[in-house]
Image (cartoon, rainbow, N blue to C red; front, side, top):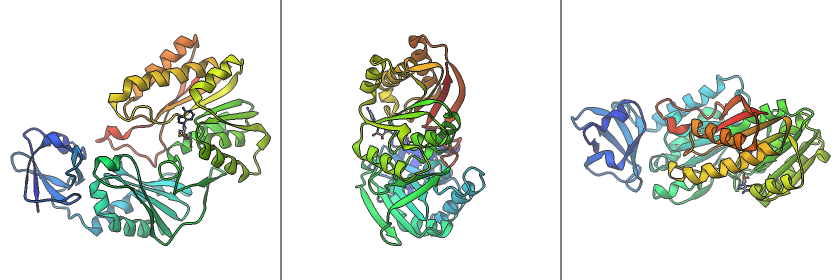
Length: 394
Ligand code: SAH
């Protein structure tokens, strides 16, 4: 097999089980490898380190499939890895029985570049690396075997595919075209648009945080900013919020939110208001109009995809959090998130603290929040910790 030889010292990160080998860590390739091919990874002194998928177009030149240099990368390998990933979810009480569930979370599940989400009996597969692309068929078979899903649909249209030299690809892979998909999440019915929705259709990572919002909502007026298809809004209504104002700048997302509300006749529709607006502008308008809320949720999109964007992103987070604190009633709650990989937990807390200080708010952290446990973070891969949140009270 083709060998990828690392530069002296560059074996250290691989030996700590970090799955990425950057372009600059590679001394040379002994033999030939095409995009996505499996290569043996060796230290400068010839010590075998494991096997990886080769990606000639990406700065991440190879991604480790296995840290066992003897392990064969074949259909059986993907069957084992996918089965282990699915079994790990089944073992957690809050995940067992969920209709919407992340089954495979890429690097942190030992399958770099592979995302698989389950919505009822449809699995949605997103392949984000050259290696993952190469093993599409094996992954589909493994997913069907491990889950019994009737259908597998592909949503490989994320931005990162471009960096790997891959074109976008979407469509049915197994079991034919899926029909309309509705999942139930803690008693709330939600339509999932696997073809055109964000990510694979839905933000599964916020599931447990939406449940927390529901538990906090009773008797409170709620403002849900960046509401997408209304996940937090509907849980807040289910929890007994007196009113829920939801803001998003995407027309299709708000249409989805309205349909989702209609799917849940048990909820009080007259307490819900949807507003098509830019959150930055609307928060200012609300402030000017003298509006106040008891519970504000801020779940913005990724402002900083990487550390290089951190400065501008930090200003944007500060801005909305400052406005959020200013719009709270005394005793109010602010639930604030960042899903930017480029903003770490500590920096995010600093930004929110700065916003509270500027708002003159005496705020404290009640809870530190993160992605649901079907989005694990491998200890060897801290980059996987993208979603962080704070529940603050004033
Ligand atoms: N909280 C949601 C997910 C939010 S995703 C859930 O639990 O499902 C972020 C949302 O922010 C997207 O729906 C996007 O349309 C919206 N968005 C992005 N920039 C915006 C802006 N400046 N103003 C309002 N909405 C915005």
